[in-house]
Length: 290
Image 1 (spheres, rainbow, N blue to C red):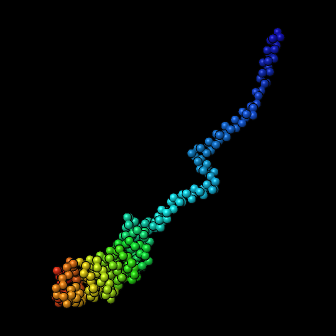
Image 2: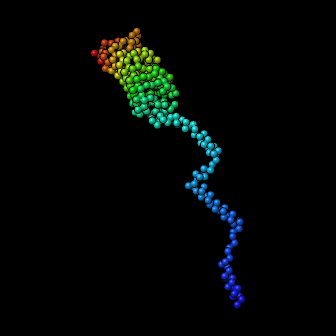
């Protein structure tokens, strides 16, 4: 009977017994686990990488920026210098194409430019500053602009320039031309004979092609170089030709071997009246003889 009573009492008191609280060591471990999980969630998750990066000190950021700038500063400087022109125009392997983009002045060119095509725009004036820092230019084409004035020294320092086209503009006179020109084209302008100096072409020993047709010339330009192969002077106001225009009056044996074509049609002159003016030529000029 006593055994039964003891058993009943034990059963009554067991639910009232509480488990012992965790020791200090267990509590520390538990907090450490929670902190570790929170750290991983906050910094190691891909969505929170930027939060981790934001913990960089200002000194570390400054050092990183300096490294980035030092590795890209030179290319960026060059790109920024050239970008405005090369956005407006097309820059390709030393060639710049600025055609029909309504520019009114020559845009800044990359220093390595060799060829500039600025046709059919609204440029009114050319100056020496436009090409001062572009020493490698070999070809310039300004066909179809509104050019009225060209500073006399605009092209004089372009020692490598071989082809210069100023066709279809409003020119009244010619500037000093660079020494290595092989082609000069200024057709369809308003150039008069007084707008061409006596020695404009004299020293151009490489000049092969000269196009001055459809202007207002009263006479053939003086001192045309021996190197010329093609001379277009048609549709001007040329009224006279002398024995020295193409030949040498004092040298009847002189032959002008290089010339292949001279065009004089559309001028108010009868070429047949000047037979001695062409005796040095292998081919007679194209034009009216009566």
